[in-house]
Each structure stands twice: as C-alpha cells, then as structure tokens.
Length: 371
Picture 1 (cartoon, rainbow, N blue to C red):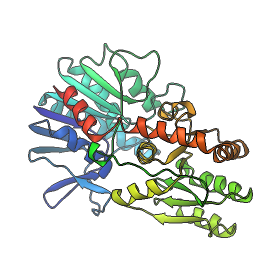
Picture 2: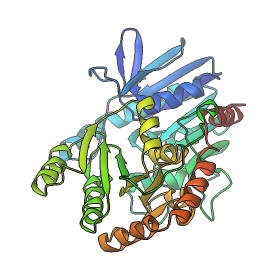
Picture 3: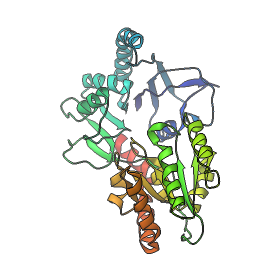
Picture 4: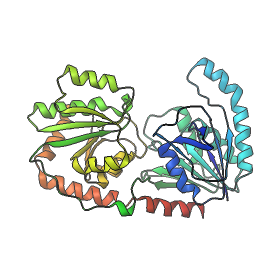
C-alpha cells in the first residue's frame, strides 16, 4: 500500500532522515507500520533538531516539498495566491499515485487536501481532525470550511474522519477517536493519596496565553490565601515564561509556585503519580494528552470545558470542570479538598477510564482503518 500524508507540519531533512514535531511523527510512525510506501506532502524547512523533533521510522519515503503559506498579512496573501495552485497540483499528483489518502486537519494544507480528495472518490481515505470538533466553538473560517467538507458524505466518499469526543447529529463518516501515550505494560498499581500533607498541583503544557498558565497560578495563589497547604509545579516552556516568573516574583509566590522547564516521558510518569491534581485552563484543545496522561497515573484533572474535555471528565465525575470565574473555581477545588471520599471515587473513575486508551489499542484501531 502507498500511503499519502497531506500535512501542514514543517519538516526538516537531516542525517538522511525526515524530522517533524515529535508527538505528530510518533503517531504517524504507528500508521506507517502498516504500509509499504509513504508519500509526504508538506513544507520543508531548515531548523536545528532538538528533543521536540523525531524522525519517521520507514525505509520507503517520498517527500514532496511545498511552500508554507498563510493569510496573516497582505504580503502573505499575495504569496498565497501565487503558491496555492502549485501546492494543489502537487497534492493531486501525490494522491493519484497513492492507495490511501490521509489528511491532517485543521490547517492550511488540510484545507487544500480536503478539496483535492474530492477528485478521488474511489480511493480510501482518513482525515485526522486534531482540533476542536465542537460546532458551537468559535473557529477561523478555514477551519469551518474543512469541517463542512469533511462532514459532507457526498464530497468525502470512502473517508473516515477521526475526531476527538462524541458529538450529536454527525454524519456516518465521523468517527470518535483518541490518542495515547502509554502501553498496557505501563499500567501500575498506584498508592492512594490524601490531603494530610502538601497538596501537589501541576500545570503541564506549552507556556502560551491560550493555555492560560497564569490562571493556574492565580487559582493556587487564592487557595494559599485561604490557608491551604498547596504547591504548583509548572512543566513546559513558551512565550509566557518571563510573564509567569515576573508574576511569581512580584507576588512573593516563590515558596509554593515554581517553573520546572520540560521533563521527559519517564520523569513525567513519576511526577503524575506524586501529584494530586493537574490544572489545564486552556482556551482551546483537541484531545489534551496531558489530561489523559495525568488520569492514567492517578492525578485528577481540573480543566476548562473545551472540545472533548467534558466528555473525558464525564461532566465532572472524573475531575473538575472550570468555569473561568476565579472565586467559583476556587470554591469547587476547596469542596473537593474537604471530601477525601469523593476525591478517591473521582480518581478511581479517572484511572479506569484513561486506561482504556493505550498505544496497544490505538495500534489495533489504526490497523482496522487501513484494512
């Protein structure tokens, strides 16, 4: 089988390998175990290879380079007008040489790919929509166009569209899906946690405004003011690093709030096990892997009601759903801290749910899609 990937993810060619953003490539390598040849249509750039990048594990890759494009400025729009026909032709050529078409959405390349796949109604296809599938959410026009095309069974024949969460009134080609970090073999018996000593909170993710790490800090600040023995460890890096550190310094929070930088997978497993809560007050998500990872190791999520998060948390039975009103959210957390039995029941439910979604199961589901 020749498997064609249309993606906006920037790639780099180094040491006879193609590299990309590690979580994306890690997932694609699972798909590629089942194919003979892969054609990748994507932007190709020069950048230093760091731990956040990973190479494809396949010995038969054809890479078709396309220019990156956007609509963020007048100059960018002019460039887009010129390069889009070139990109579209290259996508069509790649698709015509392939047996299975795979779109990575949402994104500019996903938008072009969703139009191009219309010309190949007899080929089997999958589209991975890694963003928020909620029809009520506010999203860019290009995202709404992609969702409209992907949901149209006349325009997307023989396609399975993989989305995060379960949504009402969907066309038959929309398939609720998931992603995974851990294997069956990584399941461990976990020690119970109580609130008799320091209560450990985590924030894990890119430190950008959209993830709202500052709101996580303010929640812990308020809990501390109310006399709770709490601390917050923040794992990740990003453009908000200096803003967060400045807030910590200016408000004398250094004794119980700290920026830890990044940590590898094995280290994070131990951190989740030693922590009581994960806070993710994000403005937008697809399937937030850190939520499922924390649950897997008995760390209860506190997260905003975005995308499929309410589904993941069973509307609060497996965690706490933030409403982004500081006093109300602090009260929710306080109520749970005063009820050890309720906390234990939520932890049990969270562990049982998250451990249904392992890499082993993910591999099995991918095989079915490619059969």
